[in-house]
Length: 344
Image (cartoon, helix red, strand yellow):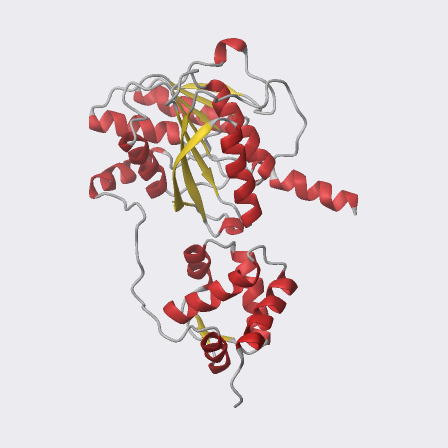
């Protein structure tokens, strides 16, 4: 067999990324091949999570790789001889199968709380996909709360959740109750009345004080609602517009002092989306303290490989919302897709 040249290998990656319209380009195809090389046989979903590329896109690339006899399926994805030859042409010849892990791990003290939270939310409302709802796992919910505690966002803090189909407010109060922590006020703004009612019912039974308010974040807050919180937390819709709206409203609710805190979950499916999101963060006068890839795990959420990043921010003296009035935006994926179809 004639050895593949580096130019031929690079052109193959370019062709595949073009056919699939992969936002990560040829580098994304190379990453998929190299990850299969290191960890194959590897299931498709595990591959998508490991490289933080949405499952549908990884699946599309896989089909093209199979057509070109570069990839095969044997109890997971594996490279063919031709696939190995392509990587060798690119200089990928040896592999280290032990990954370098620097992510946050779930501490053992959360295990009992995870079980209790699961029991508390067993009858929760089903996800409303028209609002981009996709429930985080119980492990993720409690890890988020531990993360907030680790970064001084719970003790005595007035905290607001912008959307809460993950029921983070309940997880917060369970954590505080079990650990003997005194919280400030807890407020939830959500468009879904089912979520508000469920949180209020559980909090009433448990003796927790959680203020639930039905509100569409595309509409302005009342004056008395603004400038009164120390921390905001949000897991915005899967759109750039949704990210901008939720994050901007979060800033609007924080007290006008530097060092107030924002926690934003965001699963960018395209490099340009993440770049746009980070530009919004700085535009709002937020200082990025940490971005933790694949911090959040979800039940479903195929579009983002069942994961999303955690973005931790502090306010600066320049922190200011970019929205103060009502505005018309399609911030949810379903509505945006419908508009695209209607325009065709």
